[in-house]
Image 1 (cartoon, rainbow, N blue to C red):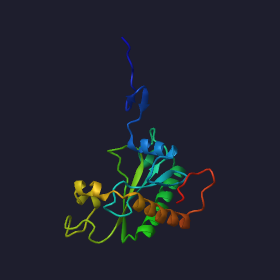
Image 2: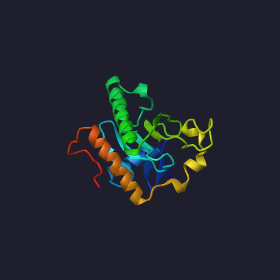
Image 3: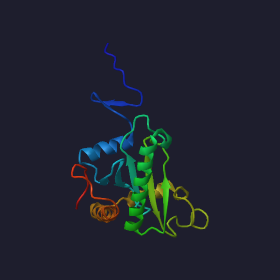
Image 4: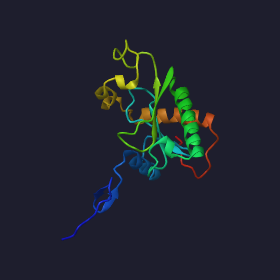
Length: 185
């Protein structure tokens, strides 16, 4: 009888092992040129538009490496400083591109322990009557409404969002070296 050992934290499909990390899977799609939400590569991570857009302009900044780097304090001080600096610049670009009144930042990791920032551009009334008279964190808005398929941008909307965000990133950051990937539409 043949016995196959599957590494912890992995799954096997037709003899190919996958990490069971949604962020790693999405980064793999970026590297293959197949992630339609990808905007730009930076030194420490990838900028992607969020799948669902109840909070118009919701963007993620995905750290390039996974492994045992699942907390900010796991990063070397210079790497951590660069990751934080780039996240701040991405947040500034998101704010400018999508007209945020305020930005909300989340670095969680209990769902996916891969370092990644959730950047939410906020506007008055965006959580409707939920929370404290319509004010509060994004997670006071019902998840079933936030992640509804009705909040997914179509191809035209997504292309316009990526164009706006890339224009702001280009304004704030030096041009990427020719070997870095980015979207130009």
